[in-house]
Length: 563
Ligand code: B12
Ligand code: SF4
Image 1 (cartoon, rainbow, N blue to C red):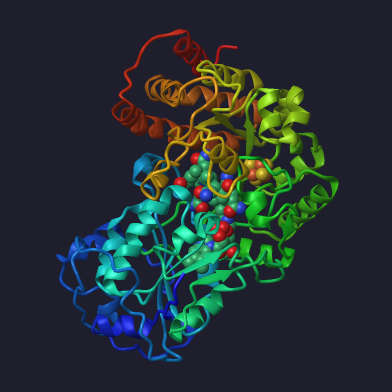
Image 2 (spheres, rainbow, N blue to C red):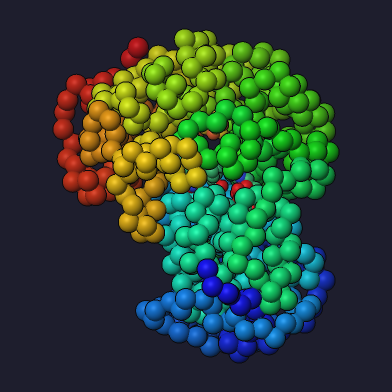
């Protein structure tokens, strides 16, 4: 790759007619819980607004729109000619771009924080400003605020499905002359691709390098590539700015992370490659302080595998739970773990006491061969005991959110309906069934690519199809269309039969916990709304029409919870 000049935030401001704002102390610069609505954000959309943003107004600074959205994107931000200007305060925006193909998914359920952005916000060095835009609340704020020249540096995260939209934002920034840095799971998986759309790519965990990136940008010395390393989660590392809400909406819950990494190494998952196999735990005092600062009473503990798979992991998790019981503010929470936790009575008792009301467990499949292919040894080992383990959670008062993937080499069109029915037999409280999706950066992607099985390869447009609600590869025993159809049948029925209250009642009976039952009620209501949004989209996208078959009657049986 040829020589690139450093991006310069001062140059970007000059382009917008905005002089450097005076340097102020860090604390005063955080906007705090800025609760602006989408209406606010849409004021200046596509250059048709008043020509001022809230940020600019606050400073008494005027700006002009640099260009229309239809012009071609320059290869690099035109803001790349330094004079180096040290000490400038950079107005940073951290954006979570969202795929337009699954709006239902993002907007119907709970609005969960994009924790990575709150973590980066916490690490912004003093003297700079930071805001978050999360497109789960809509796209208007991004377009309006960027075109209004509100920011000097744009930081993009992205899931693979959000990459297409991220590049669109990147192009808009380049037209505006605003430097862009992109990080997160997709950028780390395909940094060469990302570097064509962003001025800098940040690979891996970035806790250690993000402050340097901001300083480099302020000094006009943004590098093309930054390589992060697995963070040592000592006091303060991994902590999020809990009070900073997106400028375009307010999250429903708070998120927190107590550990990173997972030793299981499932073939379709990027966590073990990205965050490492050893489970790294944060400092307990630090967790408790952050826990007590969370603004919402309901928390999502986003750990990859909260309880882990071995004795050492369990001992640590229990130690944390005891401290939460002793020193933590009362919170109800939900996390993710592997099925083996269902065996640990003490761990489950402590978790309930500490406020845990639900655990997401990736059961993935009920087929032993598929589990082997997925390299999910912990499930393979426990396959015959799923029911007993589910009961373990429920006896402790904790509900079970079972995640399943359909599309393994052993799966047929019947697998969706059989899985739905079997999950009732296992007593799982709420289920999620998604299309197997080989994501870049995973061993499965590499294998399927080598086998020529992935057909959605018109990148970057096709990344937007990697949403887990569409098949992007050729399954072994059925066509991609058949797999989409089998999952569509589930959504269609979920949308059209009454089932939510029945599940709530069953959870109440099994867990004897009203809060767990209410949690499940909320989840299932969300899934129903999602199914109502997504099923007609499936019909349009895949040209599907509802048909009665032995599969649909089995799915109905599952929703009516007949054993
Ligand atoms: C919590 C979580 C969720 C939650 C909440 C989502 C949310 N709003 O964050 C829920 C349950 C809703 C969810 C859903 C899904 N998820 Co999810 N989820 C996670 C999980 C477990 C933790 C994310 C997190 O908060 N991490 C903690 C923060 C601190 O880490 P981070 O975001 O990676 O940020 C760090 C670096 O990446 C980097 N960084 C990130 N962004 C940026 C930006 C800049 C500018 C810079 C410099 C650095 C940088 O710096 C940060 C600090 O080190 C991850 C696994 C993981 N360990 O990350 C999967 C993960 C992100 N999810 C994944 C997937 C696939 C999904 C789903 C598609 C799954 C599904 N079955 O439907 C959906 C899609 C949701 C959507 N929005 O499209 C994949 C994404 C992989 C990919 N290439 O896209 C992951 C990596 C897990 C996996 N299977 O591999 N998810
Ligand atoms: S157990 Fe979960 S987090 Fe761990 S590798 Fe498998 S899917 Fe990823």
